[in-house]
Length: 435
Image (cartoon, rainbow, N blue to C red; front, side, top):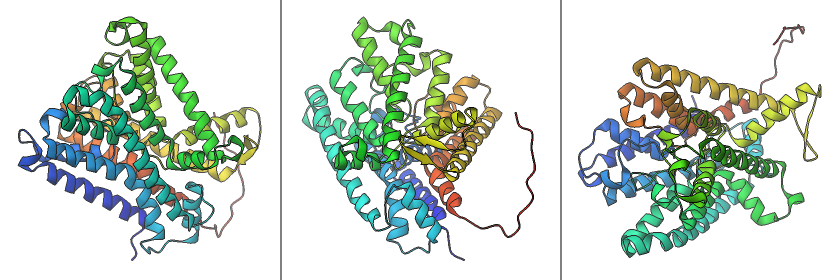
């Protein structure tokens, strides 16, 4: 019996989490001893590039421990794409033609051979973006912490930002830099590039003309811009006078910087420059919806993905217009893609709802806080209203499972959706009353 590629991919992630947890259990990794539960949770959060933490990363973990977390973030963030590409084309696994076609379409390539070219493009993009990020953040951290510690701070936060992990070495995340222009521009630029997807970044760099872009790239660019504008403006409107968040900042400039940063970080990264526990319930609901949407396909972000959300909207509009086809940017989207989107969204929503139910079984705390935690875990975002440290063993296990599914699940589901089988028996059509 041959092991399917999705099972191998999931096993690789599980092994990486276990290995990371074992390394974090070493005395050299922590300032004070931690439990296996703490170590596995932290490793899972790093590998799935989520950013939910039980302890303050900067004080609880030593330089060695922080290095382990950073490596786990890098492997977890890039591993999903490189494993997905190399698993089929380089490891010699028995993969059907339908699965090869699905992966080729999912990565927006013209042939299987182009996948290796994509991997090379991914590695070049990562090196260029992270090197630039370290240089820019060093302007802030080196004068404050000195050369050695400042460069380490710049490197760690660059890797965490580009991979949309949300791990920070400060107990208040990046709140102390709420009005710093360099931090407010560099960190978002890193996680926006990482969240767009490597297909979009490499295509935008190579073609540089809107007409030459693929439909996927156009949808990602337009969708990302729309969600950024929506989240930034809405966050500012909802929190402008809240003394626990924007209302407690000095001056309009600080509030605008905070609105920008918190608006763009919500879907993917998990950094924060204001107290997330102090936001209004309405803002929390908006954040939860954005976290479930997530970033782009073949990116370091989680969620159902921006293109999935856009296709859902287009399908809804087509239904109300009584249109049988979806058209956007002079291209059509077939019924098969719509069915894939519906399946992915349904499975995702059922996963989130079931996880919320499980967490509430052993926790009688604020329901919104628990639902927020689950949504953040599924979207691999890392924002929290302060519930992470209060979870018991069962609650941690549920969150770990949700983080794992949020990172590996979409690709695994894609393989199953790519499997086609012709029915041997056809049944007569019938009518079901809906709505």
